[in-house]
Image 1: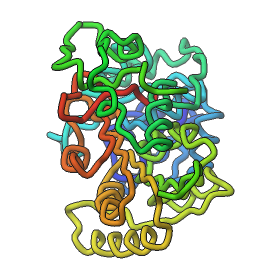
Image 2: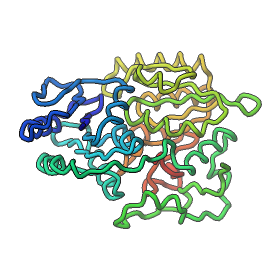
Image 3: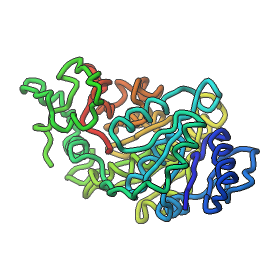
Image 4: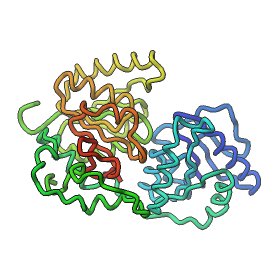
Length: 204
Length: 153
C-alpha cells in the first residue's frame, strides 16, 4: 500500500498527476491519495480531498511507503511510524507555496539520510519504480530531543531564560547534541557561542 | 505566576507540522496543567483529558479571518490566564503570545524545523515578545536570539 498526502492547506496537482499516471502505467491499484483542495480528480488512485487526524495516522501506519509534499507533518509522522517516505518539495515559482522552504527542508533531511527526495516529476517516477526495494525503518522516539525538553521544562519551572541566567558560564558551543543537525557539507558557522543554550544549565 | 510548582501552560499550534512538533514537546510539561489551542477539530482526541479549543486558521493575507481568530484567542486567554504559553507557529501562535505578554504570561516560541534557511515570518516578528525564543537550527541562532537548544527530532 502506498499512501500519498499533500497536507491540508494547498493543492499539489503536480504530485498527484505523476502518481496517477504512474499507477495507470504500472497497473498499481493499491494507492490511496489525500489530494487537498483541488478540482483535479485522479482516475487511477483511491482518493479523498481531506482526511482527519486519526485517518491520517492510520493510513501512514498501514502504508509500506508514504509519498508526500515536503511538509513536516508528513515527514515526522512517517519517521515516527518507521515508514520510508519520498517527498517532492513544492515550488514557489509554480505557485505551489509562498516560498521555497520545502526545498531547503527536503535537502537537509536528505543529507541526514532520513528521507527520499524527488526534485521533479521524472525523478519522482524513478523513485516510485524503486519502492518495492524500500524497507521499513526504525521508528524514531515520539518526543523531542532530551536537550530541548530539558530547556523547556526548566523554563516552565523557573520562568528564567536559560542563557540570561548562565551568561557568565563558560559555554561549550561544541555541544554534542548540536551536531545532530549539522549538514554534512560543513556549511554551518556558529555566529556566537552565546546563541547556543548550554546543556549544563538545564536540569532533566 | 501561580504559587507552588504546578503551572498552567497554554500550548498553541496551527494544523499539520506545527501541531505534530508541538506534541513532541508535551513531555516537557510534566506535572503542569496543559490547555491546547489549534485550528483543526479532529486533533481533540490527540490530547484526551485536556481542555481543547479550536480557532480559525487565519494568516496575514485574510484580515477578516484574522480578526475572528484574534477575538476568540482573546477570549480563551482571558479565561484561562496561563502562566506559560508555548507555540510552534504559525499566525495563531504569534497573536496568542502577543496577547499573553499583556496579561503577564511567560512565552516560548519554537520556530518550526521546516524553517531551515530563515525564520518564519511569525518567528522573526515574535522576537522580544517571546521570553524564550528558539530556532531548531544552530546556524540560525544569534547572540540576541533566537537561541538554539535542540530540535524536535
